[in-house]
Length: 416
Ligand code: GDP
Ligand code: IMO
Ligand code: MG
Image: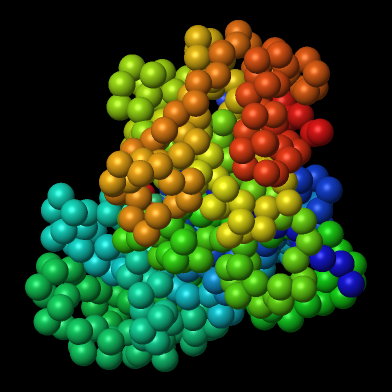
């Protein structure tokens, strides 16, 4: 019986999970997504080719790895089918849980309407319908992928749901499909997706029993977790490692090594607290050097410094055995780099994440900068100041940085 290794984001998403999942997929037989939807955007660079993945696990770029999308994911059939078009021969190496919930265009329209209605209190969602789809699931009015196999029955149920909620849809100015339009839409999805829909829970148990090497791929990040992030400025799923169990039908005993992914600095896209955000010229340099524009929405990402307090919280909540420190090269050329080592709240210094991060101001420690780490593939070949920076971060968060990434390329990765 093998154990499943796990990859999770430790910050506010976009840490570079895709690159590490792709890297590790080379030595795994299965890569399995457990949460989120097409709000995720994972960019993977192999040589001069660049891929953007949203729902398909990042193992797809390794032809030998099989890919599972678990029950904890919300799947937009339309977007999934579009994403599939980038690849050939997916049958037999891509499996979708019959228990995953379906996200339909009306979910996205509700998401956008709610954001409009919130005005300056908007969450800054991706507008893809993630909140409404998970909302329906929890309210027990959602629909699962297994139901797509009987489009006429599913159409009937969704039309009844539209009818019961008519006044809400009208107030939100959400345009709904006709019965005939919906049936045609669902039949189209069924034709393409039916061969991929299976009982992935049973499959997970079987592959672990067969001693396969299994990698679980998280989306988003710990600070966006529905329970452990900066609520309500979060996504609607369990992004932390516990979500890998419920999102795939595993028990905690099935989990192996947990690798948390973190940038050498911090970014956030969307609204909500971000204590170490740099709104000045240095934040602009991070954005420019790190190409910090969203994979999914193209929005500029807010940029700031490594937050060791939030990181300790994330390491603990996920049980991270090691951290992969990404995008170290983006800090190249700074005279000095800062790290948030504590927060000040109501004139008091604290070293933990409080109930509300909104009022926390960062306490910084400064480190001397370095010239160039880009493309370096050995720890000892890094400039001494970069080595000291990494060793200091390890000390602060109490976890080894077992992987260090120095460019988007698959091979520019230091394994310690
Ligand atoms: P994910 O959502 O966690 O998979 O991360 P994204 O793909 O949204 O964002 C990470 C971005 O950083 C992608 O464009 C990657 O190609 C890029 N990237 C990953 N690792 C490195 C690195 O070490 N250095 C640089 N410069 N870019 C990187
Ligand atoms: P990956 O997997 C960064 C953010 C949105 C918004 C909040 C809620 O690429 O790391 P949602 O559409 O989920 O309801 O939006 O969550 N968000 C992400 N930010 N990376 C992501 O995924 C994200 N997925 C959602 O910007 O602030
Ligand atoms: Mg991303």
